Image (cartoon, rainbow, N blue to C red; front, side, top):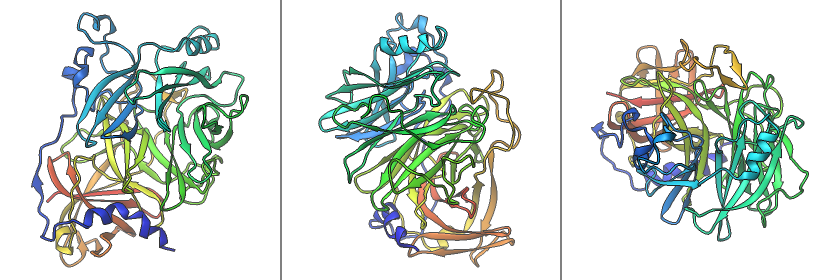
Length: 494
């Protein structure tokens, strides 16, 4: 059945409606920013943080601006020098942008961690934790902006999800209290909230959780933003077999009205190294969610598709920690993904990645191989695709690591051999062959590529124009899934 394709390609169709008819040529185009920000990472430079020091982003558009909220994770943080350098410390970073490319650092949402959260966490974690606020989530209810957040202790289930409200996306924020809290006596862990409103029923649902017990879904009261039933902590929607070793966290639930499906994005593995994004889908916001092969995410099978993972194109050191995503749908039907990525090889610098999201012919989301830099339009012809391509086959981590609470241990922040997905070079020839070892077919009407790589034919690869960050050019990109649900990325380089 190919009916989903008619709706899922709305973003591509919108781009093509005003596309250029001439043959495409790779053209030089400067990158909007550099990736290594170590020289101005200190607190005194916070106004220049634009896309830097971004961790666990959540983004929505309100009025003329996209607003982004993120964990207050900072590289080279020097709190003792903030006052003398007039850098106000706070919790939950806030940014805004008009184009999803250039970001203005607005400041911090909260001046302090809510005392109720501090008391709960420390009383249930032997006096430890509650030193930061993690993983905020933003949603609007009528004229009120609701900012969810979590406070926790590393490696413990002593956690607290709170809610603050404001009549402006920039605050000030008024604390509304506890949404949900957990401790060592509960099977779940109250972190990483993501909230969605069912457009048909008006019901609100919150997905949350971590490696401790898996991910859960609980019903909220739309009028208050808090749980509908005070004692309810929800039901299981995703887990992995060995939750102490196989990390699972960062649920993000979104709705695609064209497909009438809910998509649950999750992150696997350690956040500083092999972090990667998977996705399942459901007809209901409360699940059950199934993966690419029909497996239920609440079972213990590792799930696919895998959308992102550590990768490196030529002329760049590459990226690790490509996980914990936010996803946003534009009014025109286009989707964007926001996630952190860590600059290799040290994997300490945290840079925002914004990627276009498309839905393939089978109704599964796929993401651009490159970060978003501008809206480029072009309808391609067979001749445009002839040339040298870099292609990456995204695969899951192959190594076992010794983890603590689902994360790497100190001193183990570099990727191991073969943990970074590397590109291979292929030449798409005019006669439809690929480097004398394969073949390719381009459907110019649907802007879809079919390519044989070795013994496998990968179909329905979505072709579009985009920015090549590694070479500072505008070029042709493709994205899609192979038959096993693993991402296949490509870009024309010559």
